Length: 385
View (cartoon, rainbow, N blue to C red):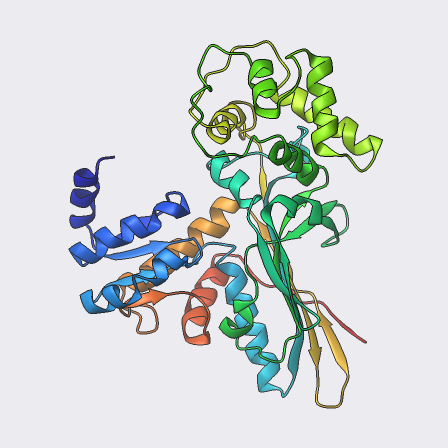
């Protein structure tokens, strides 16, 4: 949509809900500041959004963020539990939060073990971010090229084989959640076993490169593009696989076999012609949108788990394990809708000029209470050490 059309659409409304790719939220927000229109996003507060805090305050505009599931519902319950612990004199020594938007197990029937309910481009890039977190009092950094290699088995509930990896920068959440005593703060993502290995291979082979390539044109075969992207000797399957082995450095035969099955399933070794989209990432995203989207009747799954290690005044420790799951559309859409309604209603903690996110009790409580009335609730499990 052209800028003038977007501006006209914004002008005609009291609030705008921006569900575009996160890189465009700041562009939308700048327009809403010009028109003095409030805006809501379900994405993290990015540096570009942070820069709009003062202009938004000057214009009397609210930029409400992080009102989906992750981020969103995760904040609602983290803030609730942390405030309750502090009120009872305890300290949160360790905090872990993992969330995954996935196909239900019976629908995870492809080598990627994933299906896209939104932009494949955005989902793939989310697995190609660098990560920073706090572990035993030390800041740990993982560069984006190594993120998928950092995925490890993670137990949430019996019957599911999840792996988890850290997500973006967890360190500021020690301040956001007001837990200066915490020595470990990790927020991460969940995938089914097998997904990170295949995504890592796609990264290693260059398929998540967003840069435009002059040589990437329609009419070439997938095998020819794979050869050009990786520098394989020829576009024969034998030479392409030899290059895959060289580039990916598989840890074992099982992983190698699974990744090659995935590469064949996507079609990267085939003689079929490609509908090129300018960059390797966009070309791959278009392909995955065709072969890896939800079919009618298939279910999705949202799994969210917080873990707290709490130390009481007498030195005893308590392990908290609150978790719950629901469909992505409900978890994100309902939370966003509730937050938007509260903004329209002029709730004093939410309808205030500037950049707003769900980090404090006065904001989280009214949203959480409404979310719970819609059926999304916390389940608590505790064990003493």
